[in-house]
Length: 241
Image (cartoon, rainbow, N blue to C red; front, top):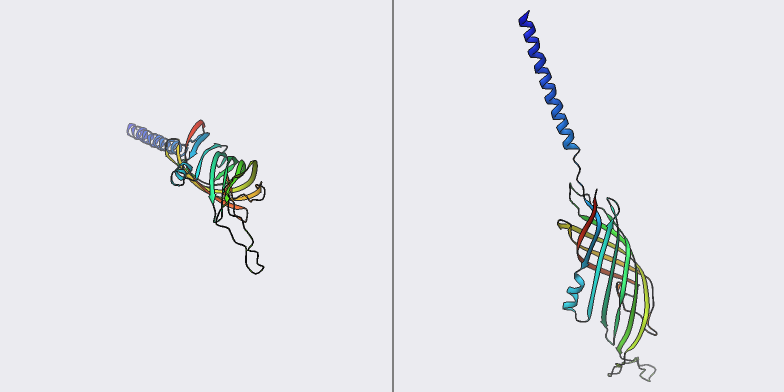
């Protein structure tokens, strides 16, 4: 009788210990499965370093651009760029300059699925751009008639070098951006993007078409343009989610 009782006690202790071990393992697995990785939500500010670099190699250009964005959700950011440009365009028979300030406002959508605690972006963005600038026709060679009906007009060898300036011109455009931002160190990001721009409206200098608009770059005959930037930015996190 005692032997059966002792055996039953051993069996109960073994079964109870085994069930507790399984329960502990299940709880441990549940804890592992419920680990969450949080990322910073806040204001990210930076600078486009491609513009100062371009100014070093191209003496006819100078400019700077500040960039910023604020994270609204896991995928969406409100974003903006503000800057100043001064550029001189040289053509075969003329030279012109555009100088002014611009701002671009819009949003970015992050199409990249980050792993664990990564905080990188492959984004698509839209912007509305506005610029206020001065324009100057620096020099030109007048198109002079040859005086003969069958001969085309010709350009005289001596150009007109008296600048013709006009201030307070404006431009409005939209642009599509595609880019990448990678977190290289904690809260420090390196990024670059390409943009395709469509001019909505632009003021032209009297009797001369605007060839370059600050923030838009070169204005082609189709009223379209292209852009590129290379940015370094830092995130100021306000909250982790």
